[in-house]
Amino acid sequence: MLDAERLDVYAVALQFQALATVLASRADAIVRDQLRRASLSCVLNIAEGAGQRSRPQKARFYAIARGSAMECAAIVDVLRLSASASSAESRQARSLLVRMVQMLTRLDQSLV
Image (cartoon, rainbow, N blue to C red):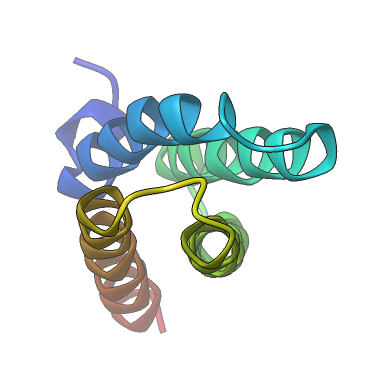
């Protein structure tokens, strides 16, 4: 098993990535591109952080992933307001993002 695969936050990021792909398909080109990039950034930075040996490097990548998750939450809000995402999809996406941010915050605090 790879280091990232041992982290619950990585699994949550993958779940959100799958949902983001569906939501992005309904958005205009600019929002679609931004959501795809931000949701992929969550997954990739968690994986890269897990693979680092030094605490500061791990913390840096987890902080970037946390910022990308916050960006995704804002995009989901925009999609909900523009009726591109249903209330149920928005709630599911937001729930995954809140969990991801909470886990990344705890990971960051554990590295201090």
